[in-house]
Image (tube, rainbow, N blue to C red):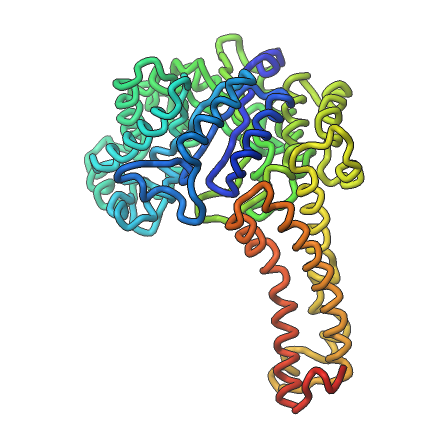
Length: 484
């Protein structure tokens, strides 16, 4: 029964709320996705969409959003390779990029949660309707739309919600469903043939009766997401069967090829994501005949949310993506699947820098950056950098006690400085290489953000240590030159 995933549509998720690629590179990536076996894109623009009118404030301020003609060219590239496009627009939770703005502040469910919309305000519903309309107007060929609705944190905690919930028989589940239904019906009125999809996590704890009585069935199809390498097959199958029992037989799956390991991961582990897809294949082969999987979205998160740091960049994750797509196509990570990935990318594992750097004809767009990031990450994780404070000279001659007393053996100070400089010079030289390569594929602001988030915090303790040594030497009347 693995056929259900092997033959269904495979959508690569483009999370553009962080590190949006330069348009030329994005077009190259779309070609590569098609080569690797994808037949669709799930595009989450967030603040990179060129919203107009009162929504113009939603546009990114760190870099210009994609222009309207660029969004047309993204679609042209996709359609020329037979890739379908499903836009994803959040309509309830994860609205940080909207609700962080002062002008929309009063539409938050609670003031300190930037992600969740207050479902009681007509202005909030109108706001998401306008977002949906602007996005869909620029995607006239799209036949499906994803309305998000995952992780609606703090729902029910706002004053208006508490008042609404005071009425006996009402629940947070009903509150959630009523907003989703309102949004879905509004979309249906203007685009009756549009197929609507939503994330399923807020439905998981609901009874079949709650879902059935709400009127959600027939309006929206659930997309079940689970990115774990140890995904619980039995529980997932039970959940899908439960959705089917209420009349939701058309369902979607969502796996992950990157961006779900830790919030700060820089290098993608192919094995971790392969395992996730192998579990999804087991789920698909265990389902009863009535469940129709419409497609699977291979998610590639670029941030955990709008305000978190960047996780793995796309080039570093391409061997994982290729391996996951081919695993779905072949029903397992077979020899044939591996061969296909190596043919296209040169390697199935981004950490295999030897193969990456061999620059074969199969080397992919962004391979050089991927190789440099892997090498730099390895250096940043090295024991001599991470544990420099445990170095014998620092532990023995420049402890917090020495700093407090402003004293150090000048000879040892020189020793510490020499060792620190060797490490810092090695890192700096690699950072410059990474910057040079990254600038070709990403905006300058993305490059700076990546360096500030992933390099600066690791080097900061070392810089602080050197600054403190300088301060103490100056207090002792010794300038650097006199002891070098």
